Amino acid sequence: MPFQITIKPSDHSFVCPDGDTVLTAAMAADLILPYGCRNGACGTCKSRIVEGVVDYGPHQAATLTDAEKALGLALVCCARPLSDLVIEVKEVRRAGDIQIRRLPCRIESIDKPAPDVAIVKIKLPANERLQFLAGQYVDLLLKDGRRRSFSLATPPHDDALLELHVRHVAGGFFSDQLFTQYKGREILRFEGPLGSFFLREGSDKPVLFVAGGTGFAPIKGIIEHALHHRLEARRPMVLYWGARAKRDLYLPDLPGRWQQASRNFTYIPVLSEPAPDDDWPGRTGFVHQAVLDDFDDLSGYQVYVCGGPAMVDAAREAFIGIRGLPADEFFADSFTYAAQPVAAG
Image 1 (cartoon, one colour):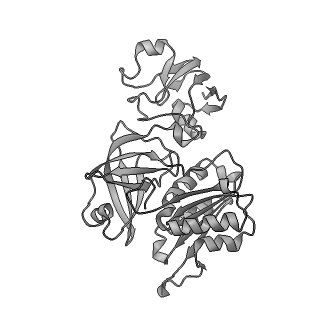
Image 2 (cartoon, one colour; image 1 turned 60 degrees about the vertical axis):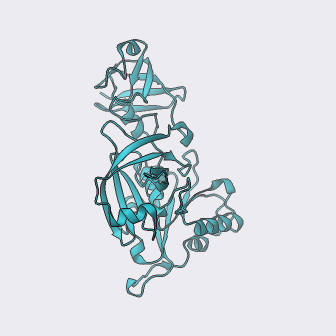
Image 3 (tube, rainbow, N blue to C red; image 1 turned 180 degrees about the horizontal axis):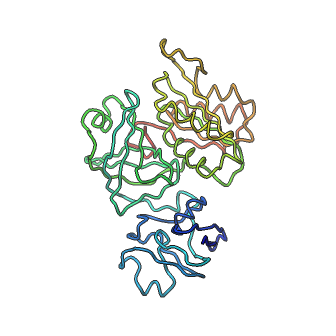
């Protein structure tokens, strides 16, 4: 039977269906608890059972000892409730609550939906999972000590493989190797999660997303997280995705499927230089200008922008200075294509 679980000190509560672990049920309820491996190996999710009884589930004995069980501790990633529970654990509600880690990974697949864009899926070791907020990024740690930053295009609930969208930059140290040498199965290391580009869920304001090129990657993760938890039901969402030509909208059908799945989600693609054979019937021009054309007043909105620095800066100046968007409701991730601690597609 389902059991009620209450978290202290927040007093948030949720229902855990039959057979689910405490962590799985909490994630389904959009309540984020600390975790690492999700299979009882790392101990990151260790929490205190204040009231109730659990089946501790399969775990490594050294990670949760009998003495710790006697003190009321359990690993919520593998513990299943046998009664209603009250547990004591600090929830993750902001990026600073998540431990930044260095982990190995293996390239599982490389797909090229456009000539200069690769969708790279990476897999962590069997005993590891990365906890992150939708929209954050990781730094790939290259052999010569350089770093390359890439946004996570996957939402936290779909973390078996982590997805990166990489644009081929001519002469780029990493992207050249990826596009000309890598075949898959390469072993890399990364550090993360990093960054503060994630949805502020404490707000009820409608949301505008503005993506330029591979700036779509973190916004994809945020939108898939929001739709999974039905956040758009109370916060209508609009995505503007800007690119040069039709081929640069490298996942052209995905936003359309989101729009079909939710009446509160709208997708508007914008091309700045459509090719003659694109036969483009849609919007043209700069993507931030399309927003200005559609909205006279942004004072009641929250805006998330990701793409090249020029686009991000133009959007910030226009949305705040011309359309009245509060400065603290503008969130941006500016891609620089350099070895700096910001995401680079």
